[in-house]
Amino acid sequence: MKRSLGARTLLFPTPVLMVGTYDAAGRPNLMNAAWGGICSSEPPCVGVSVRKARYTYENIVQRKAFTIGIPGERNVVEADYVGIVSGRTTDKFAATGLTPVRSELVDAPYAAEFPVVLECRLFQTIEIGVHTQFIGEIIDVKGDAELFDDDGLLDIMKIRPLLYDTSHRGYHGVGRLVAQAFSVGKSISS
Amino acid sequence: MKRSLGARTLLFPTPVLMVGTYDAAGRPNLMNAAWGGICSSEPPCVGVSVRKARYTYENIVQRKAFTIGIPGERNVVEADYVGIVSGRTTDKFAATGLTPVRSELVDAPYAAEFPVVLECRLFQTIEIGVHTQFIGEIIDVKGDAELFDDDGLLDIMKIRPLLYDTSHRGYHGVGRLVAQAFSVGKSISS
Image 1 (cartoon, rainbow over the protein chains, first blue to last red):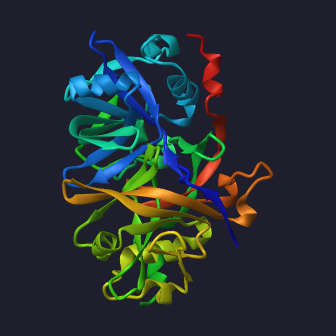
Image 2: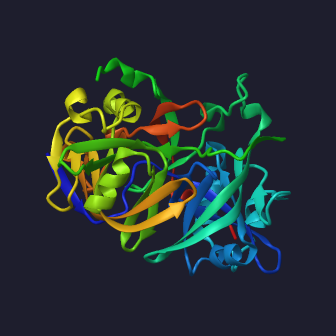
């Protein structure tokens, strides 16, 4: 029997995205966002929703670029801090000790310490309720060399990304492989 | 040192979303989508990207509604099957044995066996590259009664939702609680 929770932003799981931008003075900033995800395969695009009041909002509008850093479990303290304070009053890189790296592809920075980064050029800007959804075309994905398997692909169990539980506001790790996609379902005959 | 992977749709993690719709004949269907996420807090909205060739595309356009079911680990075989076959040729509910439930709030069905469901009314339709992003206003979230904690909130460790690894195309479970959000970061002083 299902119980109703009402009209709420509950989804399981949501990601933990570190949105990297430059402000008007060229200072690097990070925002912690759970409202986002891949939204197109060609061109490859990722969307992230930002309120107009956020410091990051004007940065993306002006620079037309952002990065999405994927923090690992070992970055959880810094990632949470990024979501607590504002770049308007705090240099989050200085406070956390994270190292800002200038992207060579887009006009935005990322933190060297996060295991994976997506470098994005602003592709579309969409108003949805109180949020603005910035759609970024993914120009490149970069991952730390030691996170790759012999097949040349990133290993999610080496990245150990965080995911956000919108119900109890917790950061969780990724669990075991349950099954291979496009495979386990073949046991059902049409 | 970071290694480049090129322009690819890699994000860690992505969700496993079961998009429930009715077709023109009133037959219930499910689609497996990883390209989606929450995109507005007020009104509460979830976005899911669908190619025009998918059977689900016309269903959402016509019915202006869909559900998002969150499958648990125990539903992984059915969830994967949903992503392998098309509703054009196969009755996925009949083939999997999943039970279609007609939403009382929106013109769309969901599978009774999935632990959590979001009932959505089509709010916006956005073209992004080869995908169409359907933005659904979340009218209600429902969860199985046994998945709630004493605080009245859904427990992610009882739901045991799946997440999709875009790199090695695997379904993973949710791991342990790493830290509490809006809390662990306070150990850093601004």
